[in-house]
Structure formats: C-alpha cells, structure tokens
Amino acid sequence: MTALPFADDATLDAPSRAWRQWLRWSKLRPIVLPLLLLAILLGAWQGGVQRFPQMRSLLSSPSDIGAILGSSMPLLLPQLLSTAREAVMGFALAAVIGVALGAVLTLSRRLEQALFPHLVLFQIVPKIALAPLFVIWFGVGGESRLVFALFLAFFPIAAATAGGLARTRPEALRLCAALTASRWRTFVSVRVPFAIPSLFAGLKMGMTMALIGTIVGEFVTGQQGLGYIIMFAASNADSALTFAALGLLCLVGLSVYGAVVLAEFLAQRWYGAPFATEGFT
Image: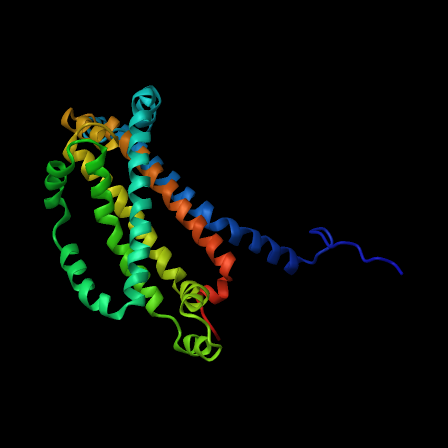
C-alpha cells in the first residue's frame, strides 16, 4: 500500500493555497493591524512636529520622547516599579473582595437586598472627592494609594460577579436539583462556569480602575510613582518626560490586562469554553 504524500503549498491548487494564506493572515491580523495603525500614527506625529517646529514646546516628537525615555530610565524605573506594585496589589485585593462579595450577594437573597443599595449609594459618590480623606486616614504613604485603588476597583468586580452568577441558566439549576447536587457543588460546577465571561469583564474593568486609583493617589500624595513624575514634568512644562511616563504607564496597564486575559483563557480551557460562554444548547 502506497502512502499518500503530505500536501504542501506546491501540490495544492490555487484555491487551496489562497485559503491557507487567508487563514494565516486571519490569525495574524489582530496583531498586525493595531501595530500598523500605531506606526502610521507615530509617523504622522513625528512628521507633524518636524513640519511645525514651534509645536515642540507643547508636543514633543516620538523621537524626543524615546531619547528622554532612554536617558531617564534610571530615574523612571523605580517609579515604574512603585506604580506597578501598588496597582497590582490594589487590583488583587479588589479581585478577592469583589469576587467574594459578589458570590455572597448571589447566595444570600436577604443580604443582597440589604447591602446592595448601600454599595450603589457608596459607589456614586465622586471618588476624587474622597482622595483627601484617604490621605488623612492612612497618611501620604503607599497605604493610602493602595486603599484608594481598592476602593475604586472592587465595586465593578463585585457587580459583574453577582450579575454573572445570577444569570445561570434556570434549566441547569433544575438539572442540578434533580440530580440532588449540593448547593456548593452547584455553585462550583454550574454557576461559576456560566459567570466566567461576566466575571472577567468585571476584572478587566477593575484592573483599569485600580490603575486609575493608584495614579490619582500619586497625584494627591506627590511622593513617588509615575503619577508623581507626570505631575512634576507637567509643572515644568516638560512634555517629553510627561509622555515618557505616560508610555510606561500604558506598559503597566497592558501587562496587567494581558495577565487577566491569560487567566480568562485558562479558566475557559479549564471549564470548557463552549460551556462557559454559551451554556447548554
């Protein structure tokens, strides 16, 4: 019996080759297109500043920002690590408290009716107005920034968790009841998988709010961190240093966001993506 040769691009006909090329492009497109748009914007930015040199005092060029980023890295790196550490710690605490609170609100109807309106009322208070109070209560150190990041981030996580757990398909719950599954088993095996999309949507929002809370805390305390560098550079009309700090801040946000996306992917693989995202069919 003669084995069939493996098909490659040379042996495939034109439609098959075009199909395989399209598949390769479709996989790379989510990466290539954003990078291409970024390159176009940076090129237009650089060209605009070179075309109008008088703009340099207000808007530094990408090349100037890159130069000051390289020369000031020994100064910026400790501030980057400080901001990243406080943002990650605030987000981690907010994730633990928010997920636990959302689960408790789902499992206890009376507690949800008693507590949730107060959480909403507490959430609608302008957050920036409370920042000086955190400084009074916790001082100008990292504790106030950590608590402020936690304060901003926990509510979106709790609300998304409670909403996702409450939207479990009724037929899935009836099936668990028919199989005499315990309440804890139903929660872990049915409610949690159904809540994964909402849970991680809340975590992504909470991550953003934790980073915002850290930067606002650094604005108020003015001791260290990228927020302090931004305020210092802006007060000296140093737009290049300001944009360099903003670029590093974007790097911190993308890193934490990527970690959340990876955790979501692993959770869906663990529970099964079709079940986690669509439920029973």
